[in-house]
Image 1 (cartoon, one colour):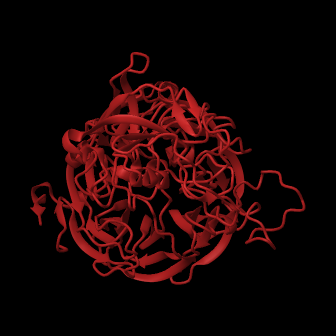
Image 2 (cartoon, rainbow, N blue to C red):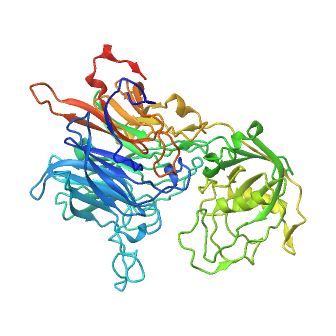
Image 3 (cartoon, helix red, strand yellow):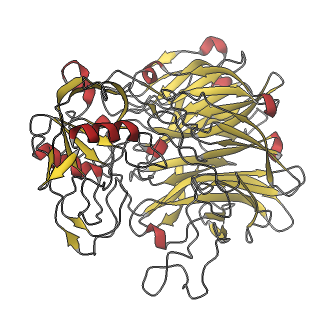
Amino acid sequence: MTPGAHAQALRLVGRTTLGGAGLNGDVAVVGTTAIVGAGMMPAAGVHAHLYNPYPCPAVAVKLVDLSRPRAPVVVGAIPVPAGVAAHGVAAQRVRTATFTGDLLAVALQTCGAGGSTVERGVAYYDVTRPSAPVFLGRYQSDADVPHADSIPACGPPPAKSAVRCASSQHSVSLVQRSDGRVLSFSLEPGASAGKLPSGDLRVVDVTDPRRPVQVGAFPPPGMPIFSTNGCRPFSAGHGAGFALGGNRGLLAFYDGGLFVVDLDAAGSPAQAGQFKYPADRRFEGSAAYVASARVGGRDLALISEADFIGPSTTLEVEGPPSVAGSKFACEAVFTLFDPQKKAQLYRQPGGRVRGELFYVGRGCGVNPATDMHADMPQEHSDKPHVPPDPYLSDPRGGIALIDRSRQPTQPGLAAAACSMAERVKLAQAAGARGVVVLQTTATSPEAFSPDGDPAGVAIPVMMIDKGDGDSLRVVLCPSVVEGRCSGGEQVTATMTDAPGEWGALRVVDVSDPAATRELGVYRTPRSSVFPPPDFSVFSPQRAAVRGSIAIVPWNSDGARVIDLSAGAPSETGFFVPPDVADPTGVLPAKAYVVSVALLSVPSSGRGTARDYVVISDVNSGLYILEAPWMRKRSGTTRSR
């Protein structure tokens, strides 16, 4: 057993650090070769559970020989440039008229500056010889978006343009159907909401991987991206998988729940059903990944809700009557995951901060002059700078109220780009004990948990809905005289917090897509309390399934063995790797198991093949474990 690891029903057989560079990602297995993705997504939606900033250096997809599970060896690599993450990988052994061998699909996603001027999409490789991967072709995502002929080819400006580059794809799956057709699923979250010609889910025919052809997409353009669920109120495609031998697809759609789509002979999807979450503001949703299973004659979808279910955060306003009462609020991600362990609201005495409210306006510092409605720093800052916003009130000793964007109370302000975290630090320097961000967007008036860099932030931050913010602004600042609020009332309020929980594994019967039915929900004991006492992450990701057993990657709770035979999920074992420092020096020194795959190694003699579980940890590398079904029931033991 590796020092610091602990396990039950999963025995460690071998491991590799994959070269020790960290940022390990998705893992897929074909034959006895493991392919490990690399790189991290910027914090957004379900990726907000690791605090900013994320590292985004040049990385490499690793190809690992697992023919000797006790001694895995990295035998090949596929370079990925800085600014891009190989966010998803899938592999399939296929035989078609145009290609026979081991096919690898790599979904490429922008993760930082420069990534938008690189071809991304989904790249397909021949990895039949893993020591010498061969590029075959690329799904040129969003090639159906019309552009002027004058726009140059993909590449860095000014000679070239980012406009014609294949857009980012978030995850990928492969299947070869009984008719011989090879299909690829990939995701572009928010494409439908952005009214692109193709929706979030892309179906690509790669029967000839040298000539990928998109054959369908889902949903149709116009699907709203904002929801009314929780503090990450987004509906967009994030993960998808095949079922019924590639004749059906399952699409995890954040707060939109799960879509079940039937695939026609060509692979084009049509909605067959949907599993919906409750329309409850306190219910987060966040369906991020999905895997299929066939158990006891039922078709099951295993939905991994890979995010946190935010704390029960509120702003308790004491008066006057027009604004008094409890206001729904969302604590900022950059204070929930404060590396200094100071800013979280729950760390304040009694989990609360009480004080007088002071409306300060937009609150930007010195910033590039560019139109904005953002909470994150801008990549480019070569535009003229504008002076800092004057405060409309002095927040010293109280709670500062900051507009998310420019409002009529400050008509003379120039357009500016400034992150919310930077504005919080300015309020903190001015003596504020807490910050309440006022949502200002009419099209999506609900509060959410904003992202940002936590460095230097030491006070709690929350956001409230637009309606509540508008009411408080009127009471606190009915007019502005000589640059200061005038005629407003004194208002006292309390920022309060109560623990939430992490996302869960949700098992849904989709045998009849028109009448989906939830069978059960499972959380590990440590995923029942959010925020955690440290920077551990206790949310699940996409499961790997064999029969009635699912192996679920659960970040800092390692890999969990889940029995599905009774319908409702129950845990029968686990393996948690040791906490290891991030080689890039940015992420917390924690276990982060983000992906699992199954491996079967043929016997050298007449014996049966040996089965293994392969898990990928962001910081520490790849672990090979004996599959739980290979052990006698009487041999299930706990070891440390």
